[in-house]
Amino acid sequence: MANIPHILLIYTGGTIGMVKDYKTGALRTFNFNELLKHIPEINQLNCSIESVSFKKPIDSSNMNPENWVKLAEIIEVNYNKFDGFVVLHGSDTMSYTSSAISFMFENLSKPIIFTGSQLPIGHLRTDAKENLITAIEIASLKENGKPIVSEVCLYFEYKLYRANRTTKINAEHFEAFTSPNFPPLGESGVHLKFSKQLLIQPKSNEKLKVRKELNNNIVILKIFPGITKTVVENIFSIKGLKSIIIETYGSGNAPTEKWFIQLLTKAIENGLYIVNVTQCIGGSVILGQYETSECLKKIGIISGNDITTESALAKLMYLLGEKIPKSKFKSVFETALRGEMSLNH
Ligand code: ASP
Image 1 (tube, rainbow, N blue to C red):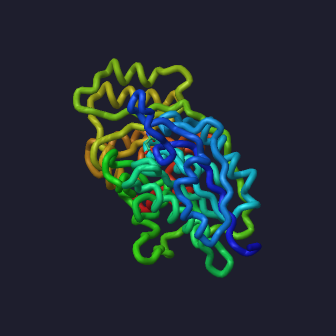
Image 2: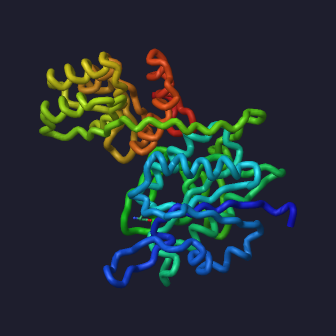
Image 3: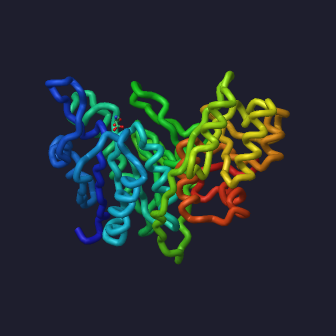
């Protein structure tokens, strides 16, 4: 018993533990202990499991930075006691939360695996059981006494992803997530297989740091044909705003109209950090590849490379909270800190 892995299961809410409210027909969260009753199979796993639940489990649409800190603190206070962590979370914002947790935990050396489901655990055709059982198994696997996975991951429908590379792409299919710019870290079939060369290796001797200062004075602006000067002007002049993520076209292209470039230039001069991410599901921002992104490069826009919008948002909240000096912010953002972006663009 002493040598089997100890796993902490953290229930934040989400469909996985929801029941139908027969009065309204809507799904609502319910008691976590009820959830465990539906999966007696987890007792057969070769690990010991303790569980903790948010006092009031939430639909993940209600997730926010305060809840991310709450979750981080649960993991932090239990870090030495457990070998791995499984976080049950609604799928709607799972990519945001898991990206944030990946930035908040520096020098992580244990697995934190997020999972959830498209159908509640009590449902006959539920995807929850496989997701949960395999996530626990992944969190408990070791090789030569060390965890196989020691980063923040998202496990869903037979695939293990680096969490900060994921995005939710489907509200209907069991295969709800994808990792458009980075291959899965593992796959579950008859055997559990890992792409070990892709896994982040923990830095030995480096102490865990949990970063809990998050700054959410950020806006995401999706560029669209016909966007008006008034809209952009008003967004850029929001009081207290620190950063803007611009979702551009293709490989980072945006209108070259004078008013648009002038507003961007002024915003950057006034100290706003502007990050360019592509609104395409896959691929990368390559500033200067087209004329339509050349001026963005010249005025000092930050390249999001192939980061997802979810991950860019989490990274910005974390870096703004870290109070990185202005002169370094661009280069720090453009550096991969937790495997969230590829090199060489
Ligand atoms: N609305 C739910 C949530 O994100 C959906 C899910 O759990 O998959 O909490």
